[in-house]
Length: 283
Image 1 (tube, rainbow, N blue to C red):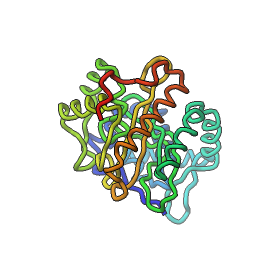
Image 2: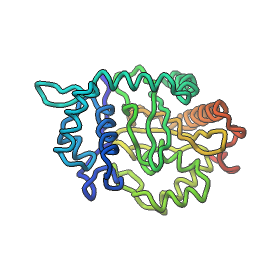
Image 3: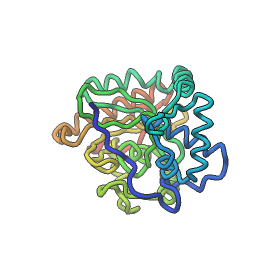
C-alpha cells in the first residue's frame, strides 16, 4: 500500500484554505468542488467546504446535483462523495487528447524506471503548479501526489523549479505577489531567502527539496520549456526521505535535467540544451 503525506494542513486562511481570492461565481464554485472530487477517493461536505472556503449548504447542493448528473456518487453508509462514472468518462476523454502527456510520458517513464521512484509531470497554472500525471515506482511505500493536485510555487522542488525557469522580470513579479504560506517546518517563507534559493536553482539547473511541501518527502525537479521559450512546468522526481540517497543527488539531478531538456526539445524549444541562464552549470 502506498503511503500518502497530506499536503493540506491547518485551518483556512481568511475564510479560505487555498489562499485564492474569494470565490464569486457559481462556475468557480462548481469547478472547485469537481476538483475536490477528482483529487480524493472520497470527500465529505464539511471537508470540501473547509478546503475551498465555501458555505457547507452550497457545497452540499452542488454535490447532490453532481450525483444526479452522474458526476459524483454518494456512499449510503458514510455519506461521503466520490467521483462518478460520468466524471471518469470526461477525464478519460480529455486525457486521451492530452498532447503534452503524450510527449512527456516516455521521458517520465524512463526516468522513473531508471531509479524505480515515482516521477511526475507538473504544469504551471498561474501562480500554482498542477501535478498533471505520473509514473509510479514498484515500492510499497512511496511519495504519492494525486493527479490533478495543485501545489504552490514556493513550496517544494516542483514549484520552485518553475520559478527558476521564469525570466527575471516575471520572477520578481511572481515573488512579490505570492503568499508564502508554511506547509511544513521546512517551507521557505522568507521572501529574500526564497529569492536566493531560486537564483541558485537557476544557476545549477535544478531544484532540490526535503520536507518543504510534505513531511517525509524528497524531490528533485527541473523546468521544461515550450517553443516560445516560456517555462511550461517541471519534471519531478520524488521519493520518501528515508530512501533519498544524498550521495546520488548529482546523478539524479543530471537525469532529471536531461529529461526536462528532452521534453523541451519535443515541445519545440530551440535551445533545449541550455534553457536557463548561462551560469546554470554550477552543481
